[in-house]
Length: 159
Image 1 (cartoon, one colour):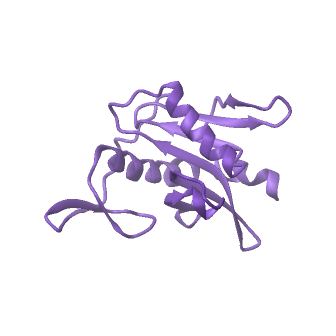
Image 2: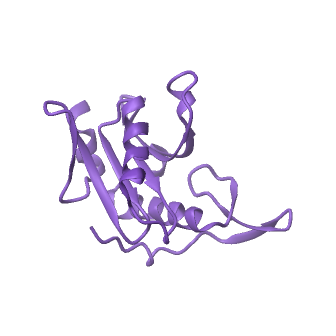
């Protein structure tokens, strides 16, 4: 599906150690400005404004080893369900730079992350295109969602 994240402004930029940086709106740390980081920060705004996912339910640059000892890789964005003050991962977002095509390799990377920690929903985007996929437990495959899932829908199975 087409994604319009251009309407979301970037956080203010700063110069740190001679490099242009922007403030990560979730972790509140400075990150160097790269094409992928620009997409990540705008996708965070999209998730909050369009899918009603609160910032406190998002985390950026999450190492897989936080969930599985020895696992390699870092997820761009993890969305957590928060029910009765308990947090659990419910969606992983893989962000690519605008010039990166969403190939099978990109989807496989996101699927690998999601499968390692048993996350049922994933999003893959390069800023202009985005796909949302849902794990079908019966058929053991990811299926493309027609509409992006709202946060309340992501929480439904856990309430």
